[in-house]
Image 1 (cartoon, chains in turn brown, yellow):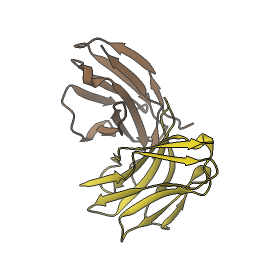
Image 2 (spheres, one colour):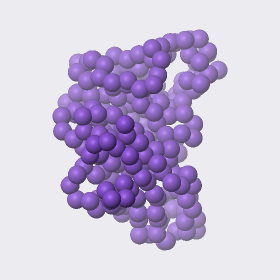
Image 3 (cartoon, one colour):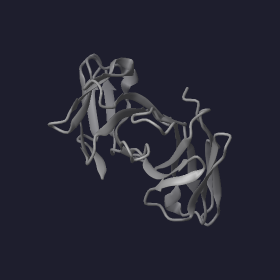
Length: 114
Length: 114
């Protein structure tokens, strides 16, 4: 049990639609990161939020956006969905302050785009 | 820039025999290194982490890894494999000052046979 919960666990969307994925972090964690894991691959860093501001971004287009809220929840929004967006989306929660802080992952949201 | 290379995409062992999953890293700065395990249709679970303390790191479920700076390696071992160890294993690197951003390897699928 990592204390990080994600919703929904599974969803199916149509190409061109928009999707919002949600994450509830551990209490006290000031940092949330989102990762995309395509089938058969390792997770890829999408972006990170620190104290409600974007704090680093991977190689993903602007149609991937996010929000972090003061109550330790966060969202990943994807606009204009493409078939290649089908993947497991993982939320990771941590406290950014010292090196090597443990990062806790949720179980992910499986997105299928048809 | 930081990266990890997992040298084997698939490893197959017999139950009760040793496990060795190989990982090499590349980092411009002192890295933090992790091993995560992912069981089918599940999220990521932290097995162990290295953060510049002892070079031999012990983790959960009998796994351990040794940080070897001269070889830029962080191989994962277990003396005796169990059927429940069958899963995907990811070697991960993070750099202090990199904001807890994780860079994942491509994964090693461990198969345990009777």
